[in-house]
Image 1 (spheres, rainbow, N blue to C red):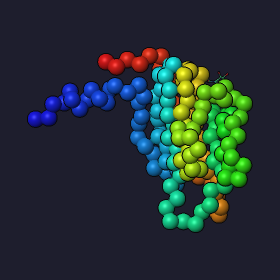
Image 2: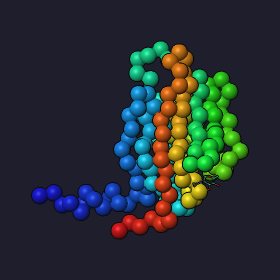
Image 3: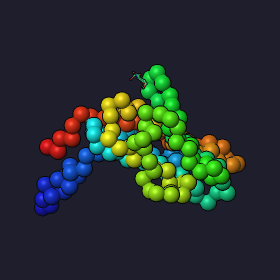
Image 4: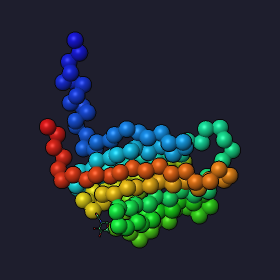
Length: 146
Ligand SMILES: *[C@@H]1O[C@H](CO)[C@@H](O)[C@H](O)[C@H]1NC(C)=O
């Protein structure tokens, strides 16, 4: 018999809950992520190029809720990164420093309730056009391990 406690406890020690990884056609994101107020949260975004001849021109992250929509950042192959002046400007960064453009996962620091919403990671490529993955971020007040 496997000791169930030894399996479950390590899973509970992380202050981030991640649900199903969504394998879109080309852009991989987590469908839903739960963050905890005051903690950091990672939003995954990777472009899977397969064997096509698509060239990535740029990627951008946007945030939206029922009433508002903001462009958070634009990352262009030619022009590099442009961080827009939003509520996330000082708290958002790529998970990896100088990532290749196909790895655009971000970390949001010190997550707030007002960060909740739908985050879209959209790639513009040539010649196949745009490809988007979305993640719904939910923020809870405390990180309760048990
Ligand atoms: C959506 O975001 C705006 C701007 O951050 C905020 O004022 C508004 O209350 C939010 N709406 C909902 C339904 O959460």
